Image 1 (cartoon, rainbow, N blue to C red):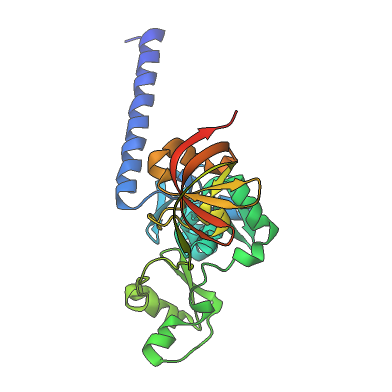
Image 2: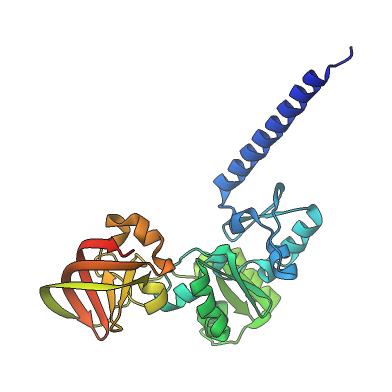
Length: 298
């Protein structure tokens, strides 16, 4: 039977739709097991060629709680052989943010990537990336656990033994180094045995409570934790909205992630704003405010 061009076109479109649905279903199935890393881009291509190349769900590897996709089986095998070499620092979280706010994880983006000593470092925006680029050596090892010493040797034998970079394992985004392959494998067999969960809350600086003084300021937005190393008082796990005023003071706006979500998301863009609120604490150049109103300045 001879098919008309119309029927052939319909059949082709149906095939494309079914393929897309199949790929989407496969990606969802993969993501249900572990989140897809690097926005579906290839980790090997990123590190080795410094190129952003989309991976495919049929070439997937789960490593350290993340699913990595690759464009073909050959590159997938390259990653599987040496995942520590190609996985992004901190599983793709921002190393500058991690350093400045006591280990709170802030996801980076593959669009804002820097390369240093053969590794990929991701950041949430270009501004924070530039902070890293100015002093990469300051942030390159924030993910190095126990200062590079062997945690297995310490816990099992009570000894401080230096690890070696060639015997590195990654667990929860942190790099653990060991003196030999056998010790590394012992760690990998049961990492939870050796890695205790972080205890206690965030570190806090002493601050002065100053009642509820009403203030009005103009300034530009930023990230309190990422750029200034401070957190909101009431929500210390939040990165926080900061307003840097013309006199150099930094105002941390309490609850901004909930009360002004759009502004909070765009805080890295140095938006000019006018803020009125109650001053609840201060420490040096930092002031914490309970906002009454926040308005953008045109």
